[in-house]
Image 1 (tube, rainbow, N blue to C red):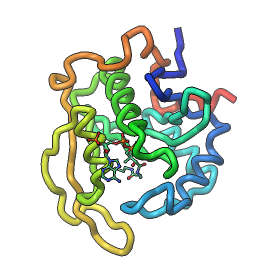
Image 2 (image 1 turned 90 degrees about the horizontal axis):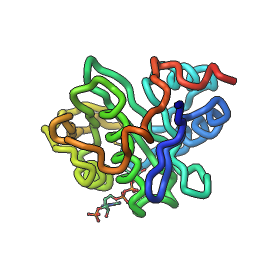
Image 3 (image 1 turned 135 degrees about the vertical axis):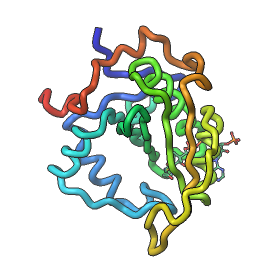
Length: 191
Ligand SMILES: CC(C)(COP(=O)(O)OP(=O)(O)OC[C@H]1O[C@@H](n2cnc3c(N)ncnc32)[C@H](O)[C@@H]1OP(=O)(O)O)[C@@H](O)C(=O)NCCC(=O)NCCS
C-alpha cells in the first residue's frame, strides 16, 4: 500500500507534487514566510524541482480542509536526517508546527534506517526551539556563526532526537506510515 498522506489530529502531511512547486517558490521568496531569522530563497522552477528531487522527503503541511499552510522537508547526512520547516504567518502559534514535527519524526523513524534527526535553528528563534522541545528534541549545543542571514553570521542551536529517545510513535502507526520508499525522487516524476 502506498500512502501519500500522514494524518495527524489537526493537520496532515502530504507528499509534495509537481503542482506544489509554484506555491513553494512563492513561499520561499516571501520574507514573511521565511520569518525573522532566514533570508528569502529565490529559486527558479527547475532549481526548486531539483531540490525537491534531491531532498529525501518533502511534505506540504495541510489543514484538515486541505488548505496548504506550510512545508516540512528532510535530507540525509550519513545516517542522520536533517529537517527544515515553516508555516505561513497566519497559521503560526496554533500548535501546527509542533504537530508537523511530531508526524515527521514518527514517519522518519518508522520508515528510514536512521539513528538521529537533527535541526539547526537561530538562537533567537524561540518558537522553533519550543516546538522542537515539545516534539522530544534535545539541545546539543551552539554552532557559532553557523548561518549567514539578514546581513550577519548568526549563532545556531543544534537540536537532535535519537531513535532510542523516540522509542515509539506518538501519532502515527506503522500502517499509516507506509509511504512509498523514497530515494530522493518522490513524486515529481509521476506527472
Ligand atoms: C517555527 C514554526 C514552524 C513553529 O511552528 P508554530 O506552529 O508557530 O509553533 P507551535 O504553535 O507549535 O508552538 C510551539 C511552542 O512555541 C511557542 N511559540 C510559538 N510562537 C512563539 C513565539 N513567536 N515566541 C515564543 N514562543 C512561541 C508556543 O507557545 C509553543 O509553546 P508552549 O506550548 O510551551 O506554549 C513557525 O513559527 C514558523 O513557521 N516560523 C517561521 C519559519 C521558521 O522559523 N522556521 C524554522 C526554521 S528552524
